[in-house]
Amino acid sequence: MSLPWRAYQQDVAGLFRSLGCSVEVEKEVAGARGIHVVDVLAETTLAGVGITWVIECKLWNTAIPKEKVLTLAQVASDVGADRAFLLSESGFQAGAIRVAQSTNITLTSLQELLDSARGELQKRELVVLMQDTHRLQQQMHDFFILDNGSLGPPAGADRESFLDLLAAVFELNSIALPRAQAGDFPVTMTTGGSLTRFSDMATFIAYARRELERVATCLAAAKQEVDNVRRHAGQLFSGFAHEVGDFLDHSGAILLANSVENIDQSQLSFALDCMKRVGDRAKELRTSVSGRASNALSRVMRALIDGPYLLLPQMRCEDDQWRKSRESVEAPLGELAALLRR
Image (tube, rainbow, N blue to C red):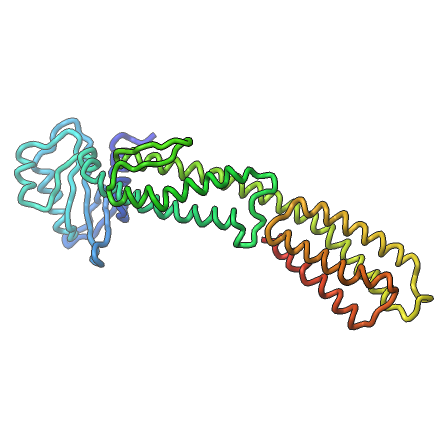
């Protein structure tokens, strides 16, 4: 378990980190006159200029005397810090307050610093929420609209629920968050089928974060289901592709034979059996794919029907004709394989 003063130090570091600073705890800093161990060192950039702050944390039961202010001022000067903060939850003696007025030292408490930084923290949180919402909206669009060639929501998925999630994210991204960033309160949101008014920033931010977490959880679960479907579809495709390959091999041997007398009747029987098995495997596979994968499967079957299935009853064909017919099947078969590997 952390000692109370170490936990206090970490809380202070966390606050400056949330403000966008690069933060190090108990950092050794080289100064002009020696090495100083700083409780918290915070660095940031403003208008391209580096800024360094040193923060001293005092979790004392008594008010801080002026000597601590003078010591911190010397450290800040020696390491070239732009400002130093002396944090105490027990207050400061009158001498300390008086001395700090003529230095670059800020005397405050963690709570006071939190209160003064609340507006800046909320602005940063809104920016993060806006980025998260935009990213989530794009992920949902790719997943639901299927413009990335994925399998998309499973065939049995509740598409109305997906539309509700899309609507919630759209409302946040396009209406509610821009109004909150502009300070245009109250902000109205559709929650549970009714309108809810948020009159302050803190309440709205808490709601928006919960809503995004809810949508992200639902999307992750749906993606996991799709991954499971994709693995199953891959297994089904392996059997389908094997049957298609067997059919093409045996059909080719039949159609390219020099004469009917040279045709092996067992090959013809096997080719017809393969044709039936191809249809059965295609039917199984169709229940596990959608979007572009489903379209590719349809093109495979159409190429088989328009090519090898029509040629086989003729019992022979020219080499070039068979080559083109086989390629017309293998091209969409390869595309389907690529889609199922994504």
